[in-house]
Each structure stands twice: as C-alpha cells, then as structure tokens.
Image (cartoon, rainbow, N blue to C red):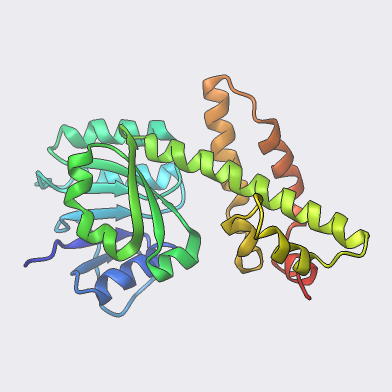
Length: 260
C-alpha cells in the first residue's frame, strides 16, 4: 500500500518528534524548516508535493504565511489536505479553510494535546475541526502520532476544544501546587498526599504526572483563550488568576515540593 507523502512545516518541539515518528513508521516525510535537519526526513523549500501538510509553527501569522504560500503554488494539488496543528485562533483556521477550498484543498484544524512527551511517544490526543470524512482519510497518519482523535465540529472547533482544555490544565496545576504547599505547611508530605489523592475523586493525569511537565506554553495558551473570550464577550476570572500565579510554578519548585 502506498503511504501518503507527509509534509511537516515547523520542526520544533512538537514538529520534530512527529516527523521522526512518521519517518520511522515508513511514511515519506518532507520537512520545511530552515534551521533543522532530521534523519529520514527530506528537507525541502516547499511542501507542494505532500499529500498531507501538518502545520506546526508558533503563531497565527506563521500559520497564515505557510498556508498562503502553499496555496500560491503554480499548480496547487486538488485533494491535498492541510492540517493546522499549531495553537491559533479559530477564526484563523476558518479564514484559511475558505481560501483552501477555492483551490480544491481540504483544511482541518488538528489541535495537539499531550505535550512533547505525547508527541515523542505517539500518544497525542487530537482535537479536530472540519469534515469527518477528511479526518477519516488521515487515520493511518493519526494512528502513528496519537492514541485517538475526536472531530468536535466544523473547522475551528479543534482550537476551541484545545483552548478549553488548556484553561482546565493550567488552573488545575495552580490548584494542585497551592494545595500541596498548604499540606506541607501543616507537616503533610505532598508526595504522600498525592499518592492518597490518586485513589479519590481528585485523581487526574495532571496530578499523577506533575513533576514530568515542562510548563512551557502557559502564557501563550492563556493569551489565546483570553483573546477568544474577549471576542465572545466572555470573562475568564480563573484563567486570569492562573496567568498571575503560573510564574511561580517552575520545574525545580515542583520537583522540590514532591521530593519524598
């Protein structure tokens, strides 16, 4: 069976392990990144030849530039699929989907959850916005990089889902750390308390894996959600509090807190 050619735009913290896994599983992989070369990934200046393009670049402007450049190819490929995997605003995805449709290119937003460890282990959880039939066409690729995917609605819905999940994630981290510090002040070891709480209703992956996390993207995640909330006329007081408290949550401070 011929495997689709997968292009990865952006070989950074998330794009690199995704491209590496796909190449290791026999997919022809093209990499678009002026600064990174990976074994098994053919470095290219354009991704016109890819059947599927995964866009894993940092910002809305970067995503727009990549997709616009792809659609400006002399001969855009009808049937090509573009998957926006960056954390961006839903309206960015919707705008680019309209432009892509004019060229016969299908566009999905495929928000990545699970972080760098999920990308390295192929256990990402994908929140997808777009045509379910198009997502079904990508199942072989998704199976290599993720443990599952969920189509939440039209293009942009994946980004909405990720923004909501991020708000829960960072608020939970702040609450866990605050609670553990209180316990420690009263002589209860946070490591022992965490073991006990895993047997109750407060158990979560965040609780279990707290010291393995890098706390890398909290500011961007909360800012994206805040911009979405402003556009929708919503107020996010918990998110605002999380943004104010997260600078005090570091890898070193969490590891010290959880030392038995």
